[in-house]
Length: 358
Image 1 (tube, rainbow, N blue to C red):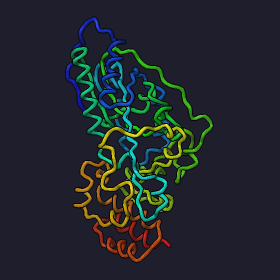
Image 2 (image 1 turned 45 degrees about the vertical axis):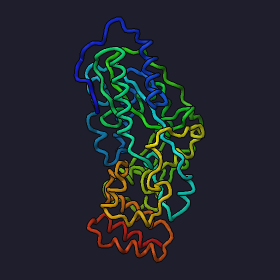
Image 3 (image 1 turned 120 degrees about the horizontal axis):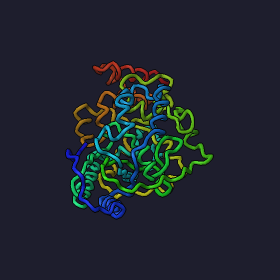
Image 4 (image 1 turned 90 degrees about the vertical axis):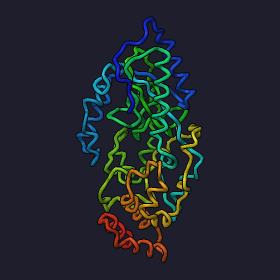
């Protein structure tokens, strides 16, 4: 989170329509594929979020229930805010075919967004560069930069800014880019002209709903996180529910099934950012190799990776489930048994479960 601490007014006689054009040009020059601008009215998105929370779909993500007033009202989060500049950056890379990886039980599947370096620092730096360029164009004003770093309704804001529409799987979709992109925002006090939202283009398609391994998309535009493999492998800190483990297959960090099957992703473009390219062969990793990493190896090899934030314990937990879902040979059994005395009860439980599977 970065901000300009002053609430000073920009220079007089600013042509805000021209400034908006300049902001979009500067944003694209910095590597953002699209830049949109919206106001801060979020009543509809706020109502949707509150209904989702009331249903308990957030699971143990208690942070989603905190600071709801700040999510609803960007001007409370950053005083003076009247507009939001929303950006997207493509992250699809030339990694090995996801379906081939998921079909091979000896390999582990890692969500495509996490194969390279963590996007937060890269996007935050670029957004700050854009904010600094805006100051150079118009003078001092109030602003704040966000990349998944505060209570921000980023998908709702991006939808309002014309970057796409929220699909039935709850991800943002763009006709020209699918859904393989990251989002970021600049909250600003500048009275910029706003962009129009785009129309929704999911139609009668239910591919994402039908493909979900755990049926986590309980209704169009409604995801029960408690069933979602991304939640189970990344957000959930404790034991993975027994009934869901077999449906996880070899997915050890995240799940992209709903994106992989979406027809709009045939228009997705490959990223131009080297930081998003696969590292340490994470696009085709052998489960046994990953399972034998010590905590020190885990921390070292995943330096700068978003995967690192789940910690070694959950890493082993997830891989144990994947090994339990695959065929058992001597190597697999010996590897699992080598973790039966792990200091973590969570690891031991999931390892024992894996050994008990036929």
